[in-house]
Amino acid sequence: MGNHLITGAGSGIGAVVAERLAERGENLWLFARNARRAAELRERFPTARTLVADLADPAKLSWTLGQQELPVEIDSLLHIAGVVQLGEIGDLPVKAWQEQLNVNLVAPAELTRLVLPSVRLVRGHVVFVNSGAGLTAHANWGGYAASKFGLRALADALRAEEHANGVRVTSVYPGRTATMMQVKVHQQEGKEYEPERWIDPGSVAKAVLTALDLPRDAEITEITVRPGR
Image 1 (cartoon, rainbow, N blue to C red):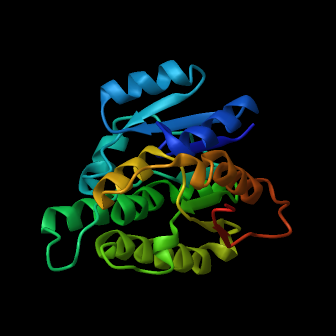
Image 2 (spheres, rainbow, N blue to C red):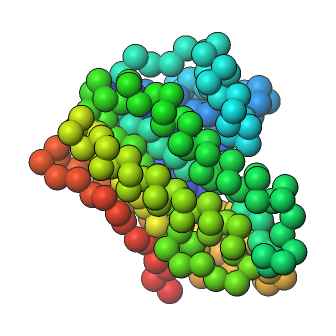
């Protein structure tokens, strides 16, 4: 059994990853933005532990986590949480930029910094669930894509820096996936949401677990997942 820290376990891809790991008897630490969300996660995942930390305020993560118990050894840190706010560059307010950059980029960087010594101890794994927007930026997606392009740079640099320490780093780039975030995107786009058109969260979760389960003689650095319909 390994120790796995997961952001975004409340819904979508993160929830499925947590479910699959829990079914295997793994030890889970799940991040929640407040006490209410932590209680909901404990009800859904009774064997998991919860950590209360607001990813939208990464400057406070060090103090917040310093008040809570973390595992000494961390086999994987799974960055799956994310937020999106569409809008043209000429219209997108600074608050939208700050929220997306904080949650999607700065918080993953800070969380990684804080727990990296525990990941190194067991030659663990850091997984960044990125987005197709981290590879190509389209109109109205500038703020979100900027945060995800930055996340790709973070992963690439971390991989180069930690290779000698035996830490594996994987970026997963899903296309549109049938999650609550996709519901919000369609609302912002003014389009009808048809979940059957998009990737099932379980398919992305399987890609994440494939990277985690790969034998130690190899490393999956990047996985791109696209809708098959």
